[in-house]
Image 1: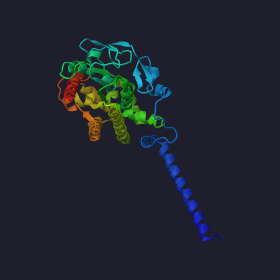
Image 2: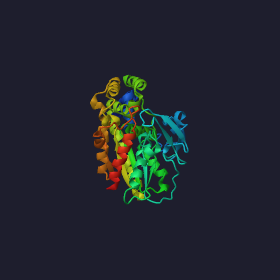
Image 3: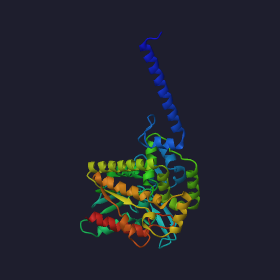
Image 4: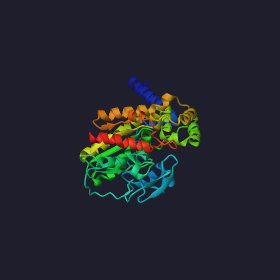
Length: 372
């Protein structure tokens, strides 16, 4: 007859086995669903495969370099930069000239001339995505307009504002831009956060760096995205895509804020170590500030099954970002209210990128901030 001690041991083993079986079954059920995988990947690091960096092979898939590689290349620090010494002409009916030209210098920067470590006056390095790089002529980007305005002001003699904006990138890449161009000895670093897709872009990169594959959702969500891509690609990728994702996967919204704030805190640390003044800028979407093209926006919203409140999720996240980084001691400028009060549309209707009027207004507002 088993002794009490043996009975307790057997009972303990049975309970442990049952607990493991239940936990294993629950884990399998969570992992086998798309929502479960999404939750796990947005909550935990992969214990097996975290990398902490993006190598060239991974970057090919992440940035789809097989498609865009004629204009961009992998960089070990910034991850993605434009190819140097490139010129492309764009027909653009909304532009006053009906066209504009994108030029990169020998470093792949959106500058007509070369930039060297030797400088005659203050240097400002500006990072951001395609809105910062600009779908306008080089001289019309807010960075280059800012340079002209500052150069005429007292205390900014021989100022050099360098446009290092790169399409398809996000805040982790802006940190990489600063690392890459530290040798240019910037006195001020500006990192422009576009609220329409920078949050999801940085989260996607964090998945990869944590060792996860990108989470894929299924069903109605993917079908809605497919239809919207076919009918309204411009608005989709400049804000709607991110907002509808937050609607379906609110955990990702919270996680993306954490990831982006950490990227900006890392930038602040590097700036402090190198005696650089850091300014974070919040750039809103067209939907947040322009009142034109409402019919097209309503069509996108209907295809995606979104409410007006859903569309406003990007604005909410931008507000929370500004509040959080300011609390962390980071200078942050949010021109959303000023832009919304402007009567003229500030973004192109053709693709919802910051237009010529938007670049001019942002340059003016940044001049006021830097002058103070």
